[in-house]
Each structure stands twice: as structure tokens, then as C-alpha cells.
Length: 467
Ligand code: PLP
Image (cartoon, rainbow, N blue to C red):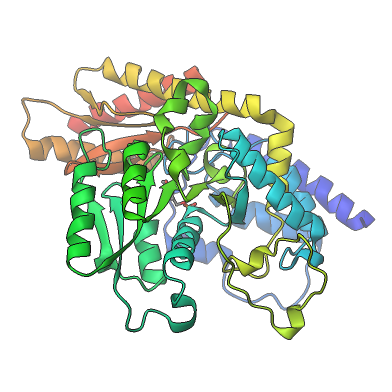
């Protein structure tokens, strides 16, 4: 490492610490509009080199003031992980060595570590048989890859012939399933019209009899069921489908069974939550996002399988290698070719904290979300959606003496105010046609005091909204 780089890193660390201390009491959410940001960051391509000090100054003035603080315990919005204390160290090392895992021989250690951390993740969630797969950038990419695997198994003709003159394929999920499945239908050319969104019961779980009758109806109409996607922690409420019942149906009809555990599956590491996921072991493919509830810095998601179905083999002359032996060429299975050394930050995180402490972090999030529910529930007009299986809670203002429209607008306005003020960040969703506020916890640094602060901010906002 050059002396210049070493000095630059030291200065950067000092700068980050100074910025952090200067920003500590500022809103965590920035509300600038695009034109304000564009004005500050400018548009001109830099022609001449600048000194490192000038660069750091530009970072401090043009970028840092506008960074949302997703790492703050006051952030409880989208299912976006907080990262963790050791993650940036791994990210720095990754950048320094600049490995590209595109082929095994181009970075043997990145490729081997990828398979190792996949095994560790499978062990962490107590599914050791699912010790193969690949890392991807996020849950959306992993869901896409899982549907690609389903096609590789159940529609191998697609590889050569595409979908021309083939029986239309149908995919089944609940109406609570993450939108990345619908996007995958579009990207894979399966078509939105062939995604069956099955209704849910009052615990937001897929209605299994409806699933079965939808499959039968499609078969009778000459369609071919390809895959069922079950949820192990939905984005809206954290609900977990009856994974056993859904898996049985997949088996009965010989359909690929995919479980989306992008958010929820880390809770399976905990003995007192393990049973909620019974039936996940029937899956053909599973996804989990270390960058969500395993606190690994973005981006890191993972597709887990027991056996990787036959890869699509592409080996142009410029990528040909001999003597492959037991090498796994992940690029033959994924969309990417060039691939960063994602496994390193997962390896650092799992080693630095250990599975036991990571499990305690997950448990802490679940305990604190229950605390949030208890504290909010003490207030007269707060209605808590009862199902909160993991670390998500949905709630709303409900005054029985007010009309539905009035109650609805109080919740919508409260959400707007919270976002505008930026002191805490929670988002909203719709359940059964009504607007709910929704909090997600996934931050090992959050304490009961942080939660109490959130409650006071939320209730203060509601009070101001109704007056
Ligand atoms: N699946 C579930 C259940 C999710 O909650 C999310 C995101 O929140 C995704 C998939 C998509 O993951 P990503 O945002 O990493 O693409």
C-alpha cells in the first residue's frame, strides 16, 4: 500500500468521524428535492485532477450533508439492513484487492469463499442440506435466479428454443409476495398474466385450498404450472406462509417450490422461532438476504439449493480453462460474469460476531418490535395489526367516532409529516385497503430508549395531525 493511500485513508476516517459528530442531532432523513441536489453536485465532467484534500472537501460539502442515516436506530423503514461495525473493514479490503470472481481461476479464493459462506448461511438458519448456490446483489436478483432454476429443471427446452410454441407456464404466490416475483415474470418473459396471486387468510398467509384449485384450473385449461413461491417473512407484515402445506401441494403436482426468506429466514436460527418455518425443508430453492437481517453491508443476497441444476454452459474461447476438477464456475449459473468479492463481508461478519451473537441481534429486534407494539398499544386510538411474527409491525390511528375517510387521512398525513421532518423514518403500507404505518427493526444497535423515542415522535405526530 502506498504512503499516499495510507494517509488518504487516515484522513477519510478522521473526516467521517468529524462529520458524524457534527451531524448527530440532524434529521436522519434528507428531504431535498432533485433540483437542489443537482445544483450542489453539479453536472460538469471533471477535466483536471484535484488533490485528495480538495476531493475530501467536496465529499464533505456535496455528498455527506445529503446522506440518509440508514444505520441509525431511528431508521425503521424499508427492510434495509443497518450494516454492522466490521462490514466497512471488509469493504475496504475488497476494494483494495479488487478481486473479480468471474471465473474460478481469476480469483480462486473469492470463488471458494462464496461456497463456504453459503454453507455457513445454510448452517446459520439450520438448513445444512442447502449448502450450495450463489451470491447475488439482492433479493430481487435472487428471486429471478430462483425462477430461472425452476425453468432449467421444468422447461429445459427454453434454453435453446425460448418459449416459442410452448405451453404457457404459470407461477403461484400470495398477494403479499414481494413485487420482485412479478418483475421476474416480466424479465424472464413468462408474462405478468401468468402469475397467480392467491388470496391470504387473516394472518396474511396464502390460502392453501385456493392455491390448489387455481393449479387444477390452470391444468384443466392446458397451462403448465411451473413454480410456487411461498413467503418466509413478507415485506408488509413479516407473515410466514404455511410452508409445509404449500410444499405438499408443490410436491403433489411436481411444481418447483421456492421459498422467499429474503427478510425472515434468519429468525430460524432461534430455537423459539424455528417451528414457524416448518416445511421450508421441502423447498427446491430458498433465498435469504444477508444484507437485510444478517446485518451485512449492501449488497449481499443468496440463493440456496441442495443441488444446483444443470448450469447453462457458456465458454467462449477467451474464457476457456482446462483442468476444472471440482471448481464451481458460478458465472455459468448467474446473469453476471464480472463479480465482486461479496463473500468477504459475509465471512467477516459471521466470524467477527459469530452465529450466536448474530442470533441475539435478531432476537433483540423481535423483542424490541414487541416493545414498540406494547407502547403504542397503550394509546387510545392506536390499532395494532395483530400479526407480527418477526420484526415488522403495522399500526394505524383509528377513532371509532370518526369516519373511515377521516381516519384514513390522519394516517396518510402522519406518514407525510414523519417523512418531512425526518427525525425518525418509518413508512406506510396498505392492508385490507387501509393505510397503515409500518415499522421494521433490523439494527443491532437499537435500544428500548430508542424505541420509546420513536413512540413519542409517532404519537406527537398523530396529535399534531388531528388538530
Ligand atoms: N423478498 C422480500 C420478502 C423482501 O422483503 C424484499 C425486499 O424488501 C425482496 C425480496 C427484494 O430484495 P432486494 O431489495 O434485496 O432486491
